Length: 170
Image 1: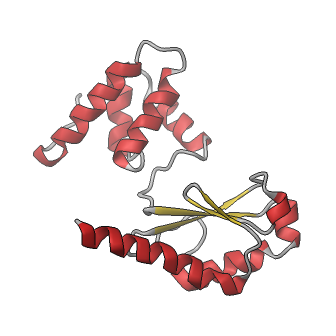
Image 2: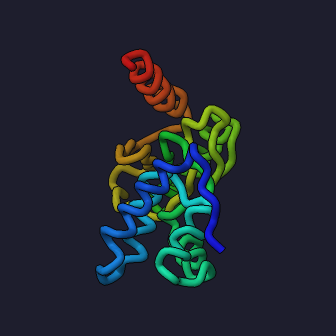
C-alpha cells in the first residue's frame, strides 16, 4: 500500500524522488539517500523513511535501523543551529558540564531537545579533536574554544542576531 502524499508535500516528495533516482544505483546508496533526504527535509520523519523503504524495496526496519543507529540522522525536527557540547576528557575536565548546564538553563531545553522557537538544538558530543581549545562547543560548523559558562549568553546572542538580521533582509 503506497503512502499518501498530500498537495502540500508534493514538491518535497518530488525532490525525494530525484534524490532516490540519483543515488539508487550507487554502492552505499542508502546512507547517501538518507543524508540528502535529511538535508532536504531537515530530519527523517517516519513518512520519509516509509517512502524510501517502498521506493527501494528495502524493509522499513532496515531503514529505521540505519537512521536510529547513526547519530548524524535525526527523526525529530532540528533547530537552525545545532549546538554540540564536547564532553570528551579534556573538555570535561576543564568544565564542559558547567557549559552544558548554562546552555540548558539559557535555552530552557535539555540535551537532544530543540528550543520552542526552533532555532537551537542541543547535543552532547564526544571528542571533536580540539583538545587544545578545551572546553569546546560547536554551533553548526563553527568551533568556539576556551568557553566558560559566562560566555554562553553572548555566544547564543550572536546566533539570535544573525537569524534576526537574515530574516529582515528577506
